[in-house]
Image 1 (cartoon, rainbow, N blue to C red):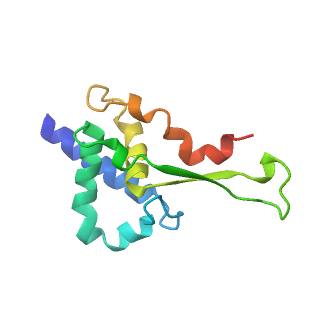
Image 2: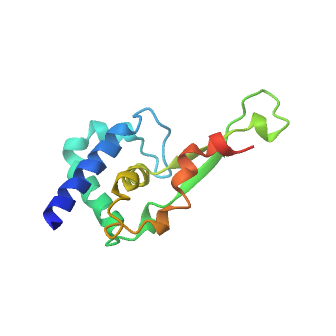
Length: 130
């Protein structure tokens, strides 16, 4: 059963990574997802293992749990918050884990969901700020 769950988790991590737009903004660490795509043959196995360790609780989430919220002006002279929609700049590894959690939710005993709940919406925060 554990081997099946590990394979499922690896596949979910890879799919989550593929779902991230390679043109996304840099994360807190300065590495865009395009870097990981370009060098997947070198870093791929390490990325998968780190994501698995983070999701299982074997690694400390604080190493990737860093997000910068940036206000981007939509007008030349912004006067209200509507003119300053925020975007979040998160580390790619964090984005992969956040995208992996959804499909794994059905395996409640396998992943500790509570520590991610607060930041899951950060990637789409600009849609919710008023």
